[in-house]
Amino acid sequence: MVQVIVPSILAAQAEGRERFEVEADTVGDALRALPIADLIFNERGEWNKYLNVYVDETDARERGGPACPLTGAREIRVVAMIAGG
Amino acid sequence: MGLVGTRKGLFLLRGDDGRHHWRAEGPLLDGWAVYHATVDARDGTIYAAANHAVYGPTVQRSADGGKTWQRSRQLSVPESSGLTVIAAWHIEPGLPQEPETLYLGADPGILFRSDDHGKTWEPNLGILRHPTRDHWISGAGGMCCDSIQLDPRDPQRMYVCVTSAGTLRTDDGGQTWLPVNKNVAADYLATPYGEIGQCVHKLLMHPARPDRLWQQNHCGVYRSDDGGDSWERLDGNGLPSGFGFPIMIDPKDPDTAFVIPERSMEYHYSPNAEFAVYRTRDSGQSWERVSDGLPSPAWAVVLREASASDADSVYFGTQSGSFFAFADGAWIEAVRHLPPILSVEVTQWFR
Image 1 (tube, each protein chain N blue to C red):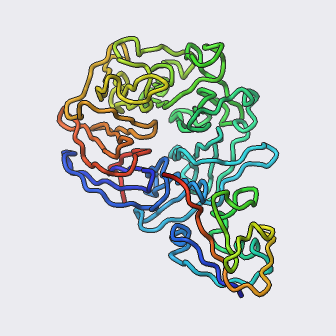
Image 2: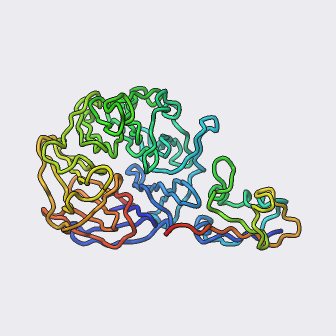
Image 3: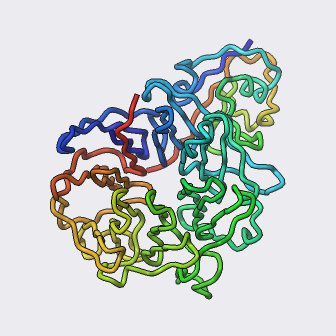
């Protein structure tokens, strides 16, 4: 099991839940299992551009993005990228 | 009740009978840019076109006055179109005889229809695959589809506007769409009076005379009395500028309309810092300035969805976060210091 932590706007779209426990082999599978998957992936199944995903403090994009393996991972953290003025 | 969509969420504004005192509640959908929100008068559901720079476009609906919200299934178009949905812009409930149907205008130039109270949405293929689409232009604000008007006499007839394709009319329930832009200027094109490419900022049909259409365009203010077959340009009849975004009508009087002129194309604020609404009561043959109660000088910006009217008054909101209502011959700045206002709707009907 891996714990997924999402930011507050996503949590508000999931009846206030900020943490989820999921069983998955990859980051993509874990995030697709969430009730807010449609806000993380666009209609073509790609991660939204301004979203960062960390697996135990490693940027998942550096390890294959959605294909990033979760072997031994404890935590996935979804973070909105800094943007705006 | 006013539904005021802002860059940071939806505010519900409750006014007294005289429209002098208003109370703001919100933000609902905290953090979402609400491009448009409306109440479906058929069942009281609130619908919101809510977009977020990180999380994308959504349609949200609430059956309990905004306490709880449900998201529609993710908006999508066929991959073969080469398009993806960029933003949800405008939600229009269907006619009374189709109680489960709603329409959604989206960027890039997409019309969706829902036949299950907004749970799921399907793109209109006549718009998606329109033979002129290759000539449609995406403006600085995107290729929005923000005006959807349904003819109450004829469920086969409706109008949509795309920036910048112009006004499109269907007479066969949405299977085919005819560009109806005759005499409407597109001064930014090499051929300013072509079939397609006009930049409609807002189009409204008069509910009591459905062949009468009003439009505030990038290049002028227009009226049609024949369902868009031809248009008469009206801004030369006393407006300080033909440029502007919103237009308001009086549901009791087809000859009355209101516009908020802005300095032309590259500037987008009140001309000469004179923030004013202009009203016509003679079908656009003349315009009178209606500015009592508005601040001066002011460099106001009012977006295309940020105005509304009902049987008793007209309303609008500014990019600087002020909501104005017209009461007893003057404008009341009913609420101020909201986030930038993107949309305004009003209703007296609420559950």
